[in-house]
Image 1 (spheres, protein in one colour):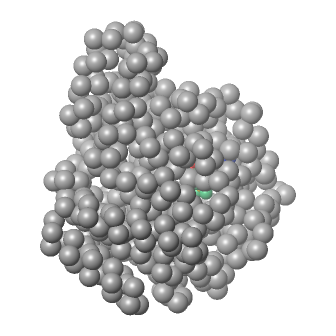
Image 2 (cartoon, rainbow, N blue to C red; image 1 turned 135 degrees about the vertical axis):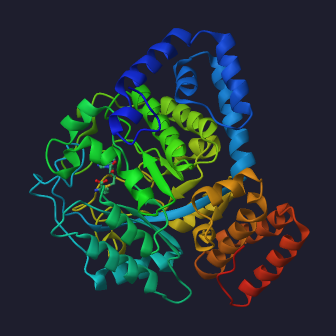
Length: 471
Ligand code: SAM
């Protein structure tokens, strides 16, 4: 039944295979010889299978967990250096016809304020985002064919890319909208989107159907096969994720890795990113009503294991998590974070953080300037880079760049140049001071002399008012 190459959801995410994986993991969790073999394989940096990774997830030997964390940290350093890519979500509309029981946008919620931004309102939101320094957005919308048809999404993307306020520009728009048709994915591709993101929520079919009792999202197969349709529509970069808290985490973890293996087997390229959202309190949603919440410790272990299992896949964390948790998982493998997020429709143009149309409570409420400064104080380089997809480095072309070890000659100078733009245009004096010092030191970590020299020249050009350099 289980077949990673199949295009049928229930065959590439086989329930029986997951159950047998969990049984195998339980049986072997104290088999330290096997655990050592799996860790040794992970050290080759070619990833782990869902079975191997599940054994490590089940293993609770403290020494081995320490070894796994150290390896995750090392792989993170080797593949992503000390760069952290920054983005912000932009909520376009919270009209939704689905019945997702964990989401406050569900159709039966009659007291949440329903809002859909007009193009003029989108312009205001984008200007507000540009004015704090963002260059990369993830647009979010509920599923509603009447209120939020694909034409609305496409028009909004066009509006976003067209706005240039002062030195601001949104250079990459990622899209997180409900599963759709190949034809619509092709339209999104033609509109110039970056990554298409869709969270699976849960890989457990029976739970999935109960958690999505009504609306088009109820269809497990249609949802689970969405990434295959997106790739058929020409989108190279897709982002996976599960909403932790809905089902047993070990089940979800195995399902997530099987999904990644499936994309690699069928399309020759795995997911571009994996997101790790955890269920949060929101309008009429109480996370305590769901039995499968995970502790911070388990969450960290999951992040470390994703890092060593799919070393080439970026990992994203949102402001659902607190500053303290973010600090830990950035070290263990997260490569992209949001900053200064507002999860309400129209939230960026309001003075105060509005709660009436929020999708979930935001734990990390700091400003972008504060987040950038905090990252730099921890020794990271906040990066506003969007070069890869603009240079056509998507899908397997991006992966070959990683595999050839060329990231340090590309991503590193790009991070420094985009950080420099941020410092010049948006940073507070304290942040700028720390940032300038960091750039001056980090420019010497560009390995190729020629690239380093061009990077230095461009940093001077940015100082003199020029913008948007990239390798
Ligand atoms: N409507 C789109 C869909 O169906 O995929 C995607 C947009 S939705 C605004 C983004 C994600 O927020 C969902 O996929 C879900 O995982 C997450 N989400 C929903 N309710 C949440 C909650 N209470 N806490 C945390 N995340 C939540």
